[in-house]
Amino acid sequence: MAAKKLYDSFSKTLLEEVQRWGSMKQTGVSLRYMLEFGSRFPDRNLLLAAQFLHKELPIRIARRAIELQSLPYGLSQKPAILKVRDWYLDSFRDLRSFPDIKDKNDEQEFTKMINLIKVRHNNVVPTMALGVQQLKKDLDPKLDYKDLDDIHQFLDRFYMSRIGIRMLIGQHVAMHEPNPPPDRIGYIHTKMSPVEVARNASEDARSVCLREYGSAPDVIVYGDPDFTFPYVPNHLHLMVFELVKNSLRAVEERFMDSDKIAPPIRIIVADGLEDVTIKVSDEGGGIPRSGLPRIFTYLYSTAKNPLDERADLGTADIATMAGYGFGLPISRLYARYFGGDLQIISMEGYGTDAYLHLSRLGDSQEPLP
Image 1: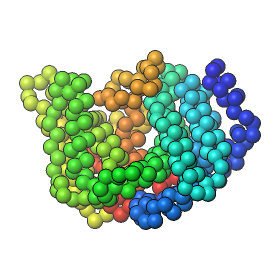
Image 2: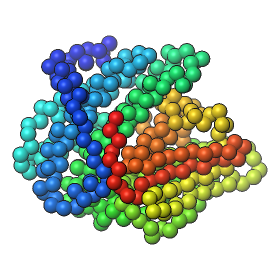
Image 3: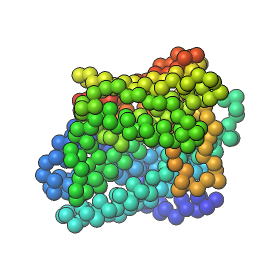
Image 4: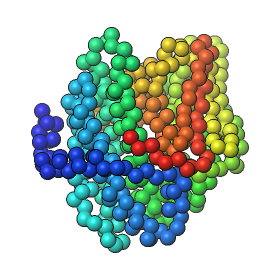
């Protein structure tokens, strides 16, 4: 009821404006464009970028706010989804009430404001997951996941859009760092070593595994540590962390009561002409063929759900060994955002290979749902 009342506090004029902006055309950018744009004429380009975001962000946010109000199976009415919708409407209102950006002062104020919007949306993923859990409780357990295609497609669009919004805001905010690390242009590392990022992500995943199980299989990374290419290290870290975490859990659970030593996870980094491919291989027993179509859905997790409805959503996104079934589909969206992909090949009774393809060229436009 409280969520309903909160929605009623948005004026009719604002809601009409959301509809109008939600019908406008979005404008995509590429990794290469962000790189080139950020490396020249910083002051003039920051002003141009702020003016672009002032027009672009309300369009993207309005589209998601509209979709959040018309979801099937009553998902729109779940308390957690209502909360997310209100965050989107608040952010739309903040952006639309900000005056035109004419000079450096305006640009700096705008940057502070969009950073606050980014912080407001920090917990969107766990909150949306909670809404999906609230829906799952009400659904007929006999319902096939294929019957929920429209929800999966909505969540794919929603999260892809969120990745784009956070990349644009994060890139703009990071361009204001007074002492950026070498070879950094905002979020983008012009000489990122995928081997180094894979090692760091693997260590983070192993420390989570150690905390949960008391032990963790080794992770061996193969590849040239001196090979670099331009990419967003945060995105790669998130994807490799998720894949290694899944592999560690599978191996740990398979060998938990065995006398045999748990075999290592192997990561191979290959540098191709078009793609950099990272393969994560485990001997964790694999996934049955019948289960493979479900691994990229948002309503499937082989693990007990750690997201309790009573949990404080401020802390609900702490890394756990098994998530709320969103890790793999969201990792695939991160890969696709810059023109890559994620594929899972499994051998039931042996293990799983995950192939993470990253586009080296950086010239594909953002997918704009």
